[in-house]
Length: 229
Image 1: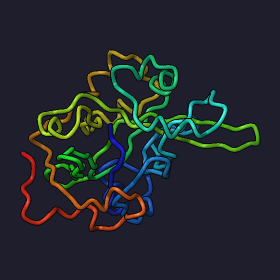
Image 2 (image 1 turned 45 degrees about the horizontal axis):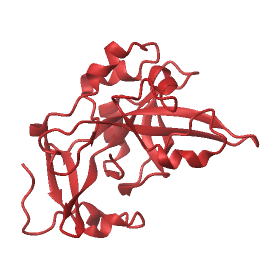
Image 3 (image 1 turned 180 degrees about the vertical axis):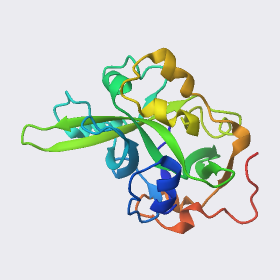
Image 4 (image 1 turned 135 degrees about the vertical axis):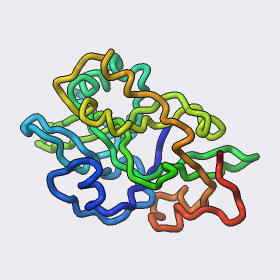
């Protein structure tokens, strides 16, 4: 599972990394939580190239009677996303990349859970593999929403949790976003655990437990505590 992440890098850096047509305006976020708007790159049905969008985190299937169901669909398992009714249409035609530069996971230590911040060793932003969906309510309300794909943990993540988010290799961005690619045998190989040697993790303050705390202190390492290797 992945329930919190960060994106602190300026929009100009995304413009270069993700090939966006216009640098997005973005204020650094240190504690992005479910049901909030999250930064994503997608190819809309009426556009030929990728665009930056803010999507509601928690996928709302097009057939849902109310948007509240999205709160339970922040993650989708790579093993079942292509066949599960809530996700299968999006897996075929509406894939996106959710942009981040770190995420959080919690490890139980006695009676409490210690939050860890996980990022790439080089500190650069990266893309989670995501799915997006368009929902319209009876009163004309429209919401574009998304879910983040998870897979088995790599060696770094295994002590923290039995799942980890799918971080896409940059060489996979174009194929993952391409709505013309619908064959599962071409997409599934992209959805593997990220190389553990390219990642690092360290314990952080429990301030991140409260989504109202969205400050740099959330990602600061606890003093005197070593990183996970």
